[in-house]
Image (cartoon, rainbow, N blue to C red; front, side, top):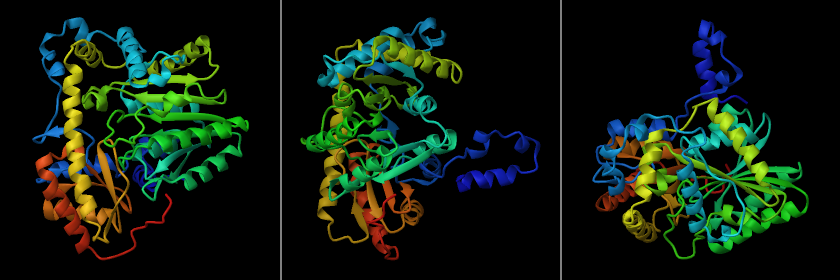
Length: 438
């Protein structure tokens, strides 16, 4: 069924010349009243704190690694304005592949493709769906989910976006996960999107949970079902508890079973704090997949890139190459990660102390840029926080309010969370939708 926002736009265009020329995609597409729209609202009105966007700020300004800042005036003309190769700078691609292995030692003896540079992780996801998602196919993902997943799968590809309830009882809701898998396994093929650290909850599986996820997929594969598993690793590397799985699930799925094919979406935008660089990477792995087959998939990706954005931006890739060559780069990244961990710990202490508040329930969180509350009316709470306290947050759905602590300085956290709890308690009491499965 076409989204109601698309229907509203089509009604406005009805009878006009441009309206008569709309393609099927043109009719389905819409701009969601989600993170970007609510972020724009907060940018105008959030005078106290803007906790809407997944970007790390310091003193209200974007954080930037010294290695990036100091190189900006020193790029050559070729490093700034020349076209980049369609699949990205070859040296940077090879360097990123080496970094994937360094961060995921389980891949040391596994064959996988050379990463292809894409114009951000969102673009990479869209390219993957262009390549592997046809009209009517189902894409499973843990809910509550980032709004772009549905926009890409349903509006762009006319596929079926199927969120399952991802969290329950302080961790992964394996009951909902198993049920979702079994429904699709009966059709012989499963397309699954796994996003860890999860946006909007800020949860990553524990070591034990990661093993269980992999075991369930392997079990289905051994029964003859084929799996495409997309690992959205946008916030990779930001784990704040000792029991969190440190490696991407891609590392374990890469050589697990002939019926499992994995695609990894990652990049420097979040890992290296360069959000506006719009540079991501797309990497493939599958047991038994040959070098020639990886090359064929890369060629198809290049065709999709060539026929859309042509190539990724050159300056971003040039700056990253220079920054990665500096010995102190990891030290500075570690400082930023430590600052995010400090914010996390402050919020964890606040949430642990507020078990008396019936109006809010924190979803499990242990990693990434975000945490979320389950509440009775997320949109009402968002608007009240913005109007009365000048605090910007995001209503992900009717019952989920996301707070991006990445963009809230540590010295603001106490005041922001005090306002969130105070405002939630002042709203009319209704069901929090705790038992609702998206």
